[in-house]
Image 1 (spheres, one colour):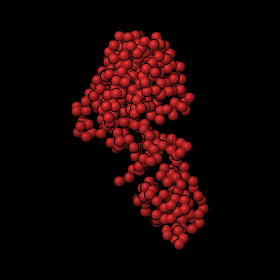
Image 2 (cartoon, each protein chain N blue to C red):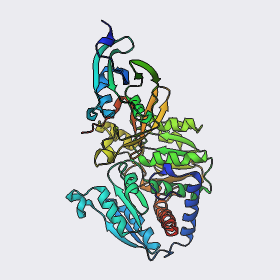
Image 3 (cartoon, rainbow over the protein chains, first blue to last red):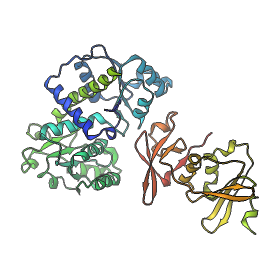
Image 4 (tube, rainbow over the protein chains, first blue to last red):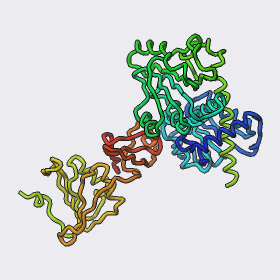
Amino acid sequence: MPKHLISIRDFSKEEILSTLEMATTFEKEPIQPLFRDKVVASIFFEPSTRTRLSFETAANRLGTRIIGFTDIGDTSATKGETLKDTIVMVSKYSDLIIMRHPLDGSARYASEVSSVPVINAGDGSNQHPTQTLLDLYSILKTQGRMEDLKINLVGDLKYGRTVHSLLQAMSHFNPTFTFTSPEELKMPQEYKSFLRERNIEYNEIINLNDGLNDADIIYMTRVQRERFTDPIEYERVKNFYSLNLSMLSGCKPNMKILHPLPRVNEISPDVDNSEHAYYFQQAQNGVYTRMAIIAKLLGMNEKN
Amino acid sequence: MEKQLKVSAIKDGTVLDHIPADQLFNVIEILGLSKSLKQITFGTNLDSKLLGKKGIIKIADKYFEDDDINRIALIAPQAKINIIHNFEVVEKRILSIPAKVKSIVKCMNPKCITNHQQVETSFTTIFKEEGFELLCHYCERITDKDHLKIISSE
């Protein structure tokens, strides 16, 4: 286990599996105040309700104390303090830092100046590794295995960092991918070459209906309006990628729908009560996964 | 007229020849020559069969470590490095692109932390059939050869 959690690229297959295994034990017994003497700093330089609440719930369940801020307006960063100075100071107060920051690469940099472990809770459009780990945990939990699954990634495959990290992480487990996206939001070439180098099969389609029936996991993402120069094009695509209950009649019984949330139009509310819907449990799994990560990083710190 | 006459010979030192003309000042920058106290002569926009227009730098009594000289391979891969003793070329060095590139190249991602705070840039070189790309250690984005910008020491 690395000393920090910055990028899913740093994680080997074994480290991924041992983190998921620990998350399973926390799910069975979610209240484990093992770290009453620890202080966790939760520092959010840009707002994120879901991720922050999930992390703070996880830290609370482990019995830690939490300090921090939720908005850059509260901090001396607005007075011109550098990220380095903020991190050095916070690492003197706390045993672990959970950080979200709008700049790409800020988390790696923070880990280099911090004297305590750093967890990246999102650095700009770069990495969000705990999201990836909770996605993996949700896949493992619903399918009972990680190997040889058919995964359909849907929506904004060009800019979506969650799909890129998930693709990298799943590449350890011999998956087959379907990429469903409009022409203007196709999976970038660098990720396709990454898969080709590893002999991982993928196919690219435009029509959502074509990739539903043989999938084990359908991973939906939001298509963001601001990605389009032509608003009419956005309207067309927006409705094109709306999954509703009637489309799921031919799906495999084990198929689950994941979504990093928040969703807008891409999953119709009539899917919510279907046994294929898993996106709310997926969010709940985030707490167990984050407990596992915090515990691992704090535990390692104790031995030092 | 012979091109050797355009930039006078040195007795001892290093000659960097076949530098693409538009990269000459970047090479000077990367090697830190603007702060050097050695005698330096250079020429640019000289005719070259290989490059069309080339630059040349001659530095008296100066010899570079491989790690230093290889940094110019990023922008002048065809450059020839000749070590001179007593007006004779005693050694020809071949440039190779370094596996790690620190602090001389700017990350092309405008949202990268290195472009906002005082963080030394750091890249891993990815070698490709058609050349190379640099993977940023911080933002994990690629800076390709066509977008390579040298950080000025100012």
